[in-house]
Structures are given as C-alpha cells and as structure tokens.
Length: 87
Image (tube, rainbow, N blue to C red; front, side, top):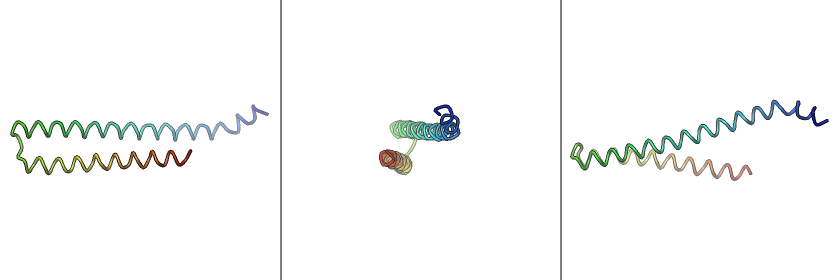
C-alpha cells in the first residue's frame, strides 16, 4: 500500500518542491537586492566625501535608496509573518 501512496503523492511532492525552490530563489534575490542597495549607498557616501556630488544630490539619491531598502525589509517581514502563520 505504501508503494501506491508514494506513486499517487509524487506529482504533489514535485509541485511542492518547485514552489519551495521558487520561494528560495525569491528570498535569495531579495538578499542580493539589499546588498546591492547597501553598496550603492556606500558609493554615494564616497561621492559626497570626495565632492563629486552636492549635498542636495546626495540627500535626494539617499532618500530613494533608503526607501527601496525599507520596502525590501517590509516585504521580508511580511513574508516571515506569513511563513509563521502557515505553520
């Protein structure tokens, strides 16, 4: 009977595996995006320190990058809350 159960459940296991892999890929992409934004912020601070941009340009670009970073963190927190609710 276990063999029949395994055969009948295998398509569902495959679909669940695909969803898990997609979920992991999305999480990895979010982490990479956060690292990219952090790197851009670092470069922006260097540009300000070397007087390549003005304070006003710095403030404008920094606000955009920080908003993107906040949005990513909010999305991650929502995802984690959803994952806990699913358990």
